[in-house]
Image 1 (spheres, rainbow, N blue to C red):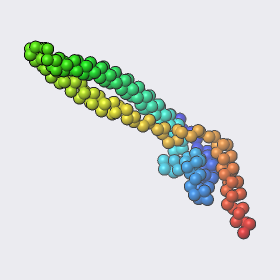
Image 2 (image 1 turned 90 degrees about the vertical axis):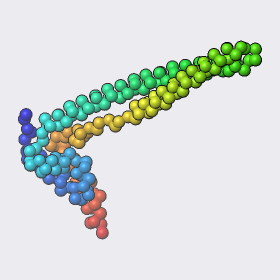
Image 3 (image 1 turned 90 degrees about the horizontal axis):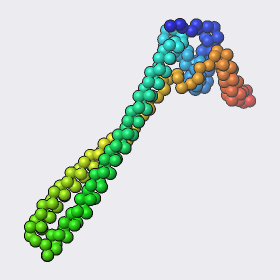
Image 4 (image 1 turned 180 degrees about the vertical axis):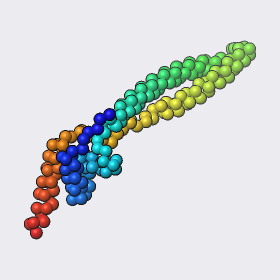
Length: 193
């Protein structure tokens, strides 16, 4: 594990970012990787940038992101399976309802024998119990679908990985541009008064 040397220009860039934090009300600390580098160096005891730590965080985030994608795909497949089972049970319940209507016409028919009417009543009771069980299963499936539909948030990128890495020259250039902006917006206005 090799560490990047913390050179003169890195120190100058970090100091510039820290000094500009006061007139910009801390904006340079949140926008400038230079200033974040200074805060990181102060808090870590001056170790400098540790690229292996950043690489480890990036790999860990990629692994978490892949696991999240796999979990989401599994949830979608499970939701689809539950919906298909629900549709099948609804079809069975619909057929049962049609048969119940047919059996009720048998019971209401005065030309049918008492034995046929009694068989129809028993069959209606069985079909209604089956429909009740199917509806209860579908309510449970609806709860499962709702639970699976709630998507957990995707893992966010670790701090420092979402912004690009800048060289010392780029940092100095950004600091100079920021200094000019501050001069023209804030300090030059004071001279006019």
